[in-house]
Image (cartoon, rainbow, N blue to C red; front, side, top):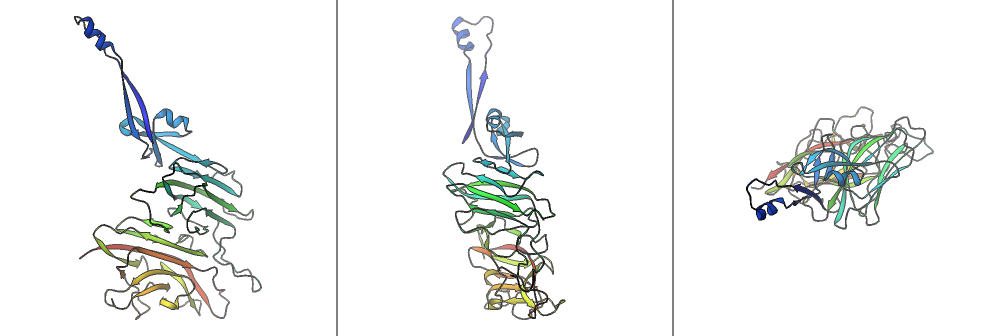
Length: 368
């Protein structure tokens, strides 16, 4: 799409010119300024689309700064519960008066749209359950019960999430029949739901389009990856998805390491309330774990593992009580997530499970 702006230039006559010269100079000249409706940074700090001022107004947007060398305005679009959009870079925002369920519908801007990137500028709703309902009821710990967010996808189902997910993101496949984004919560929740989600539509031919099946997509040579609700202190139940990292040109391998000594805590049943931290590998990880295909320490390149859990992201079979850096050259670069539907009760004879989640750092290594 393009913005069109007509500009008018009037030439003045000069004394002493011939009639024919004056006639030529008196002609009004109209110029057409044509510019693409690309994304733009608004003065408010949000992200908008470059339109002419009149186009922005007719589309129901709000002008916030200029673009296209001053010929256009950065136009912001937003909507709330019950609204719909077919415009790129629209924000789905909450209001204090919202009631559950709250649904926002996103339709493709054109037939060339394949994905939606949901950027959680603000995402604070009720935390997952941290209590056990009782011995005679199903184990519901770390499940989203008081509030939840769901997103339609034309590909693999996106997991249900809740808690604190500000600055996280989610990619879903665009549907021909439109995607629905839904927040729902119970009347008993004490947390007032608050969200501001930037919805970017991604072309099927865009260079930054994620590969199919990626729920999160990272494009930097280095970066950080967190499990949903890491800031809330509990990972979420029933999570099966892929964090994909775009391989840089000329980069052949990647390394992973936990950010702090306590930033990796997944499953691995512990028999005591204050267990000694330790890592678990391979088939011993059966409930909650991440998948790093063919990962190994640099000193044990012939000993590769795929599954990692426990309270340390360990680099080798021995010792399991020392964290380190893992390396792999398996392409594509993916951090797979597999969290089951429940956590063990602390009163269970088998013990409890680590359930904080993960916060890890990755760094790509150039080919040699």
